[in-house]
Image (tube, rainbow, N blue to C red; front, top):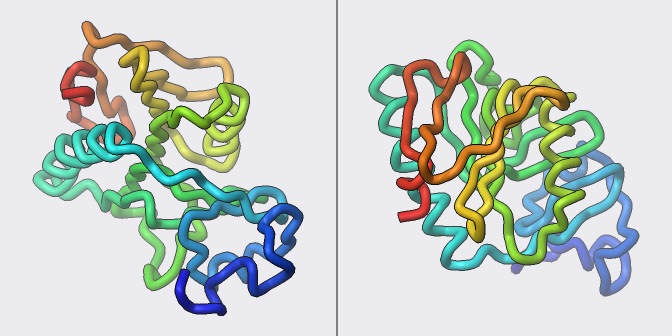
Length: 189
């Protein structure tokens, strides 16, 4: 955040707590390290090395499958997606070809088909679950919440349909990333 235009502190005071902006302002500016929740900027903690390693593993396996089968596009944590009253930056996201917005020079006005969130040490379980439900409510069809300590993946299809996978299980793209399969253990190598 070298440019004052992209610096939340330049909007109001020296703190991000309580800074209120519109969704349009968030999409028009590059607020690196922040998400937008219900009118306020929320500082996201910097990812750990472990978080980065898991992200790369998810991208490595998913991207090869998506690219080979021309299913759509994969996005990294720098990409913003609009979810009703939130602007979020999932750790990894997939958007199918038929849902890709024409203008891809700024954040996506459509939610991803698949959102992947990797739990950080500072994340609260409540907040992670609330975010998974926000994805689903906005139209995301599949959410994977990866928990590094337990080495598990919680697969959400809806608020009432979810499954916990362990390292002995196989993660699939179901009908969202058709044909994709990967051992959960591979995500933690």
